[in-house]
Length: 302
Image 1 (tube, one colour):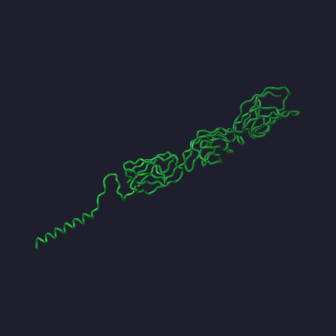
Image 2: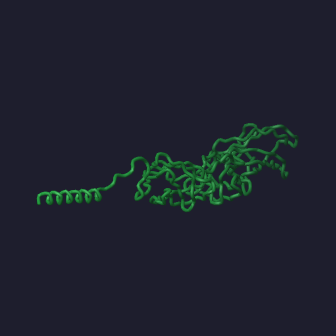
């Protein structure tokens, strides 16, 4: 009887041990190979936006040895390191926009998707033609062409930081008309939405008066007209004749009959009262109210 009881106890203990062994969880495999139930976990994406050709790094875990990178439906070749780091370059043909970025491991496990922005290629501004415009230029004389690379039909021309109307010519040229602004240096940039802008270049608005030619006009009884053509003349410009001021701010000098008439920013008319009809040599110069002066011009006239 005792022997039967001992045998029964031995069998019971063995069966109990087998049951506990079956219920004990198995240890996971060591190394970088993820368990079949785990999905790739993305912890960081650097940077979170880039232009075509840019490099991107993904850090996380459970990538395995052969995960694939997807931007939307586009598969991108990638380099996997230690099952926790992915490096890839954005294809050059990708269109700008917002994409879902995710990883798909060889066993089919897919990571959570993250938003990734593909930027427009950064515009490059190489030059302005011309890079100097007269303050009184009109029409086509105020048109400037921005020359560079990576322009598109959505590129925005920025003048002193503000968008202005422009005309897309090609990926290397954008034309615009210079606004009516004060003289001096102004900044021009090309901006590709949403966030890429070129380095600014300087455009000069030239306000210094310049004389291009001097001709005789109508001849009256006691005076004749000397027509002065050029640019950047002002309503209150003064004319200096051999150092003597004619017109300008303050009007006529006491006892002076001669006058300077402003026609527009390209023409002044000097009403000259000569002592005789014999030609004489003298010098003239136009000076604007801000003190900017034209070159000295030699004239031979009565």
